[in-house]
Image (cartoon, rainbow, N blue to C red; front, side, top):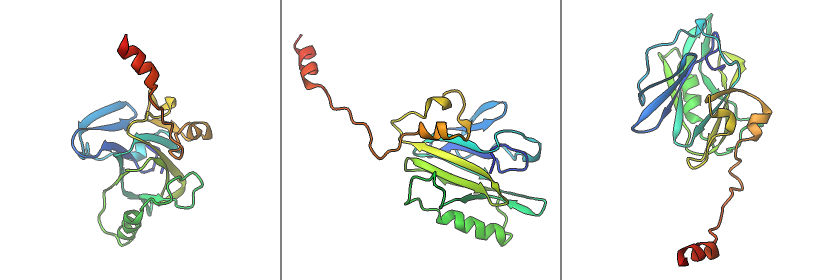
Length: 186
């Protein structure tokens, strides 16, 4: 499931609900209305990141293109036994249904997955298990790691994965009431 890699499943990053969508491309980021696809991508002519790591905020999602080539069907599969996954309660039932639909030959051209909970999620290409995509989801009030400032897609590396907030022990800063009282009284 290499993002924009030759022969792989392409994706479009969108925000749930109303608003604008971001569609990562090799030429930059295009803007369009949410849930509107900009035609089809011929991924056989595209090169890019083989095992991408994508960062997004909770409430956003990914649209994968679903295709078949050379007798193989390319669609996203969740990898529940990956050690990178951090949300043991992730409901991937719709992905199991997608697999059934694709294997039954039903016409499917895309699949949308929303992420409501912060965590790390690992997916692979149903036609090529060596192609994986890791999606890091952060709380809406938290920024993605610094590596994602210029590009929402990075090459998968343990260094960048370690930079994701775990969500298990959030840092809560208590207000300094003495300082606030001192400023307010001045």
